Structure formats: structure tokens, C-alpha cells
Image (cartoon, rainbow, N blue to C red; front, side, top):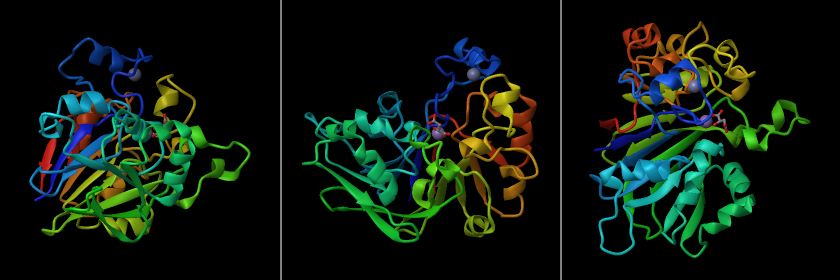
Length: 309
Ligand code: MLT
Ligand code: MN
Ligand code: ZN
């Protein structure tokens, strides 16, 4: 059995975002039941009936996410956590800052591509993760890696990373280099498998759907996918920013190149949007856009949603 909990369904900034007064954020802030708040992008997964958990990305909201998720609470009288490690899909702020929350001398294994680990470890603030108890473990794209904690006991979970179209993290962009200095291993999707034969995909950032990714996802039981924006120019048309979704490394939900159209022929049994930006109208439960995505067979992820495979 695989248990998956959406800790945060929002994108960077969360919903509502601290400095955003857009109509969506206003409704969330006012407690409108149609506009449920969402914390930043992370899942928790367990393949051993909830005995141990691994985080898929560690968001800046991790402290709050753990507080509102009882299966992740300590189970001993002293210090201890059922969270044994973290698997990173990129080095974006919304995916790595939660590592700093996990600094209290707690044994952890942190998995990521060599390039992502190198960038994160090069930032000395992460030295706060005590090297005596924290180990950084490479996830080589294309290879199946057994996910286990520092004591080496198996979790029943393995991960295969695969490169997806995207870009280097915003804080690492180099304007002098082509494509801002992005390289293949900067953004990956994850295929997670349990040793009981269950399998799902987690792809919170993906700028396009090339044939090789489509082929990989075809027929899958469950995919959590990039739901950052509804339209490519949403940030611009809402007056919230100057970048398109594709410039930020994300494909839109709607449109001929969007995720709904791209997944239509793939026969994926369950499709759930995550990493949803506060500007995206699918966050509003009674919106026309929400009805459209649900009619297309998609679910809109929400904090606390649990899926069992
Ligand atoms: C993104 O998903 O595009 C990033 O989280 C942006 C950011 O770092 O703010
Ligand atoms: Mn993000
Ligand atoms: Zn907003």
C-alpha cells in the first residue's frame, strides 16, 4: 500500500500570498469557503503503512504542514520523527526551504539529482543540517534508487527521477547564459514505486509535454502534475507580474499545449493538479475554470488530501 498526503497544493507564495491583493487571494483571506487556502508545494509518502514517511519537496510552510498532519507527529516522548527523508525535484525556494525547518539534529536522508544537491549544499545556510546525522544522496536520472533512512532500514519505497522540460531555480538564474544557465538535471519528475507493486508520478514543475514524458505517463494509475497557471499569460493579464508560465518553467492547464490537452490521450486513471499558483482560477471551487478541469477528469489538489494506492 502507498499512502500519499498532499501537504501543500499551492505554488511558491502559497494561497493567499503575503503580498497579493488579487481577487483570489482576497477571497481566501476573507475565509470564503469557495477559496480554501493552500500552503506551498509538498507531498508526504509512506510505503510501510505509515510507519515511516518521506517528503517529496520540503516547503517553507513545512512547520505548519507537519502541525496539521497527525501521521507526521513525533511518536516518542523525546526527540524523534516518522519523517526519515526528503526527495527533491528541483532547487526552487518553495521546494527546499523546509529543509531548514528540519535542522534539529534529526537523522535525515536528502535525495536529489547531483546538480540540485550541489547547488543546495553550496549555499552554506544548509550547513545548519548537521552532517553527523544528515546525508545527501544522489538520485541519478533513469536509475531506480531505493529510498531509505539513515539507519538503512528499508521503507518499501523506491524512486526514479527523469528530466522534464524546465529551468534552473529562480535564485540560480544567470541572465548572461543561454536559458539562464539551465541544465538537464535542474528539474526532474519522480516515479515512486512501492515494493507491493504500486506506482505513481509526481511532477510539480514541467514546461512542456514532449513525447518521451507522455509515453512514460501513459496508462499510469496516478499522476500529481504541475497546475501552476490556467493560461500561459495569467500573471500578466491579472496584472500580477511580467512573466509567462513557460518563462517560469511551467505549462498552463488550458490551451492546445496545456496539460489537459496533453493528457487527454494518455489514459491516466487519476490526475491531480498540485503546485497551483494563487492567480489560478481553478483554486476557486465555484469557478467556470474549476468546472472545466473537473469535467475533463482532473482533480484540484488541496492541503490534507490523502490518496491510497
Ligand atoms: C517556480 O515554481 O516557478 C518557483 O517556485 C518560483 C520561485 O522560486 O519563486
Ligand atoms: Mn515553485
Ligand atoms: Zn493573489
